[in-house]
Image (cartoon, rainbow, N blue to C red; front, side, top):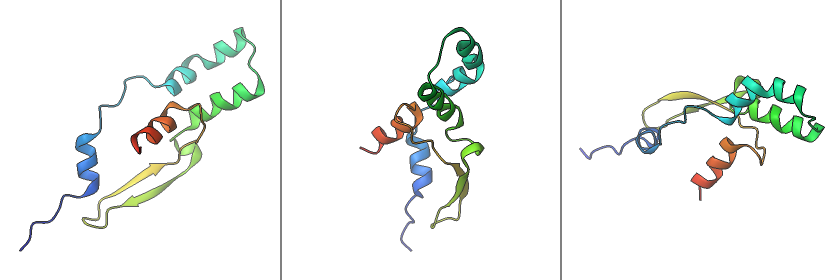
Amino acid sequence: MAPRSACAHLVHAEEAPEPAHWEVADIVRLYGDSYRQQYPVSPAQQQVLEALVACRTAQLGGHEERCRQCGFTRYAYNSCRNRHCPKCQRSIYRSL
């Protein structure tokens, strides 16, 4: 019997770097209100801040991913796709 190749989700999990302790979204959640009280923020800047906070959270919904080889299932939250979002830009550079 031929050996089964490793599932893609297991291979990528081993190669993935450790997540950062703080994300930009965490800082915006903690200090965004006080920043906006002290400094004027345009509507466009406000939209960016809201997108950063919502990115890859239940607020934007998500989808179920299932491995066809082993049946492993995980829920992945949708991204904001904002060009200013470090989470979204990081995933673009990883795919290049």
